[in-house]
Amino acid sequence: MALAARTLWTLRRYWANRLGVDRAAFDSPGVTVGSGSAEGVEIFECDDALAIGAPEPLVEPLCGRTADLASINVTDPEAVREPLVDLGAIEAVLGPAFYGYVDRETFTPIESSARTLTAADSSAYERFRAIVPDAEWEQGGLGFEPGETIGLFVGEDLVAVAAHEVWDGLLAHLAVVTHPEHRGEGYGRAVVSRATDRALTEGFLPQYRTLDVWPWSVALARELGFERFATSILVLIDTDESTEEA
Image (cartoon, rainbow, N blue to C red; front, side, top):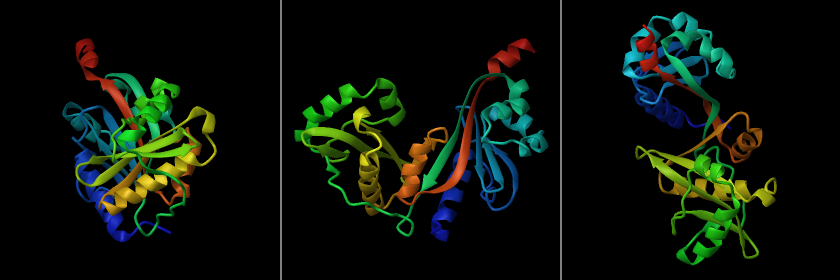
C-alpha cells in the first residue's frame, strides 16, 4: 500500500523547505538547487526529481551545471564526486541513505512485549549501554529518557531500544539499537514498531533513515510498512581550500 496523498504532499513541502528549493521541486522530473544546507551538498532524489540543498556560496555554481547533475546516480557515491570535484576539497560522501516514512494507512505493527521504559529500568539500560559499541550509539543518537525510550526485555536483560526525535514539529526521526548477541531475532523491529505507533498517536510522521549498504536495516523498515520516499547523499566539501588554491 502506498503512502496517502496527504502524506506525500506534506513530505514534498517539508523537504522543499528544508533544502531551500521551490515547493514544486518534487512535482516533476528535473534538477532544482537551493540554499538549504549548511553541512554540505545534500542530493535528494525522489522519483525522477533531484532536489539539491547546498551552502549559499555553492548555489550559483551548482545552478550552472544542472545538466551534469541530472546524470548523477545517487546509488554510486564515487560517481557523485565527478560533477562536484572542482567546487572544493571533497572531505566525505555520506550515503546513499534510505528515507522511509509510514502513515496509518501503510503501518504494519507487530505484537510484542516492547514497552516504554521507566526510571526503574535505568540499571538495565546502563548494562545494555555498556555492551553496545560507542560507534553504534553515535549512529543511533539515542539517550535514555524515562517515559520516552521504548525497550524490550528477554528475562532481565534489555535487548533492544528505540526512540524518536522530533524534527520541526512534524517528523518523528526514529533511532534503534539492538544488543549485539540478539540481532536477527526481531527485537529491533519490535521496538521500532512500538515507537512508530507512539509517534503516530502523538500526531507525528515517523521517519526511518538508514544507509542502503545495511539492507537488514532497510528490510526492518519495510516490514513495518515504511515506504521509500527518497534516496539521499550528503557531500561534505571544504570550499575554503578551493578558494585558497584559486
